[in-house]
Length: 165
Image (cartoon, rainbow, N blue to C red; front, side):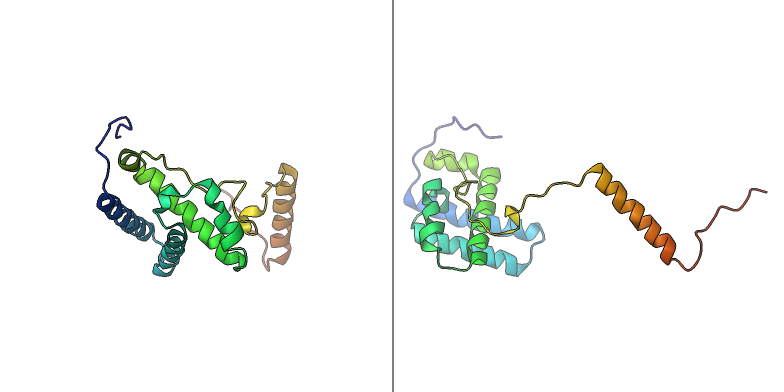
């Protein structure tokens, strides 16, 4: 683990550009290593590049106030596009936090923080639905009904253990 308190010389524009390239390449490799398809990875990269083009600076500088991007710039786009872009950004920031937090802090003085939080995330996907687990009684009823259904639909009676002999 690296120490966040270590002070380094200010990074040059070239250093930051190289870091941005390395970080994106690392993100792509990490997603590939996780077994995601090339299409999924490519889609994530396109979403990140479009958000980067709008921001006009490295994505790690995006802050929650930049969520206006979803409310203004992407307002007229399809709901799926907004959700996919938000998910790509959230995944990218998780990657930054896990792999580059110390390095980014040392080079820029910034603390990595995902700009998409509960109050400003786009709505309308499966993440919006609250999942409430079934009660013990509901689970019991499900398995009782399932057991009865299997027994009634089986052409033969269940096998029994032969007597010891």
